[in-house]
Length: 300
Image (cartoon, one colour):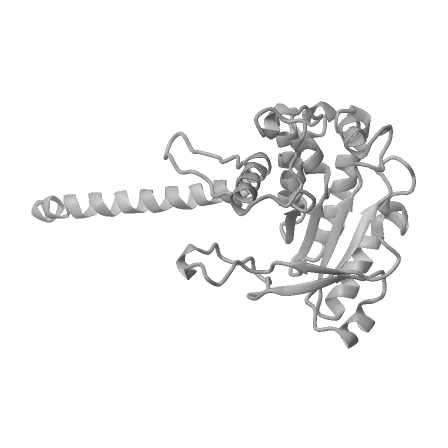
C-alpha cells in the first residue's frame, strides 16, 4: 500500500468516441466524465478537498477475516467504514474501498496465489469471509443516497485465472453454499459462485455500492508490462481475461421468456416481471373490452 499518497485513476465513464446510444445508463450519482482519485487515510478528506479537485478517495480494507486484525477491528463493530463514508460525503467525494482480505486470512500459506486458493476452499475461513462482507455492506448501505465503490480483491482473480481450465471461472473450486449462509443456497461451489455471492450480498444490503474488479491481465500467463506483446497479441490476451472474469449469469422467466440485464438484481428482475405481467393483463382486458363492446351495445 505504501507509506505516502498515491494517485489512482478511476474510469468514471466510457470513452466518448462510442455512440451515445451504445452506452449503458450511468448509475445515479455517478460522474458523467473521466474523474481521478487518490489514496487518502481516515479523516483526510478536508485536506484532500482543499488541495485537489478529485472525485474519489480510496482506502484499503485488509488484515484478514479471522486474524483479529481485520478492518472490522479498526473501530468498534466495523464503524471504520461508516466514518470513512461520512467523511467522504461531507467533502463531496465518492469513497472507494479496496477489499483485500483473502490473502491475509488464515490458514493461507505459501505464495499469494496458493494462500488465496487455500482460503477460498476452507469452509471456516469463507464463513468468516462472507460475514465480514455482510458487515461491510451493512455499513456502506446505511447511506442509500451515497455512491460507494468496492474494489473487490485485487490480484485474486488473476491468480484464480491461472488455475482455470479454458479460462472458465466455473472450473475452479470455491466454498460458497457449504458455509450454510442462507443467501448463498443454490450457488455453485466455484470461483464463479464466489463472485455471484458477493453480488448477491451487495444487492441485498447495499444497492448503492458499485462493484469494481482488478484488471490482472497477467492471469493469462502473459504479462503485458514485462513482455510487451504486439497490439494484436495484447488484444487477444485482453479477450482471454474478459472470458475468464466477465462471464455473466442471467435470469430467465420460463413463462414470458424475459431475460434479466447483466447488472440487474434478482429482486429488480422479479419486480420488472410483475410490472410486465400487469401491463400484459391490462392490455388483454382492454382488447376484450373493445372486442365485445359492439355485442354488449346490441344487447342493451
